[in-house]
Length: 194
Image (cartoon, rainbow, N blue to C red; front, side, top):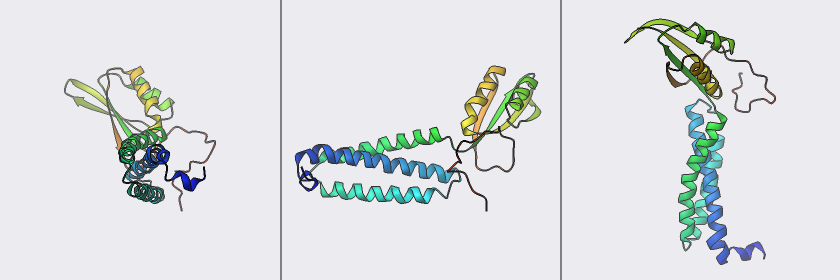
């Protein structure tokens, strides 16, 4: 069947169009979710490119839905694609693990082992003696890449399972100590100086 003849068939109206609308909507909303996350994380060079493709896909999808108002399944696919696209965008961002975090740890007793283990793993640590509601404590601060959070939390839990921890996004950093990693490929999202 030639492509031109497919557009007027029941197959196109009830199967092909809804699948295309759903898939395109998942893609454009995923791009939009990533664009917003990249802006919030300071990756502003990539955001306009994602925005361009997001809107281009959206215009094509909306025009197809408007040309096929007789297909209620296309409307459902449009809404389902929007919902799924939000989830997919957040999932992709979670897998990319872009960004920097500050991990704060409050240890009620001896913190030397935790400090040593974090330092041995290559993380920069700062500690401060303080007084908490139950007595003397040590505050430990470490700034880590998001992709390293699980490893850092494992060290903390192994060393001080009852330590109070809090994690917060860091907008920007200057200098710092981070574990060295050998890169097999250049990071396409890394900021270039110059």
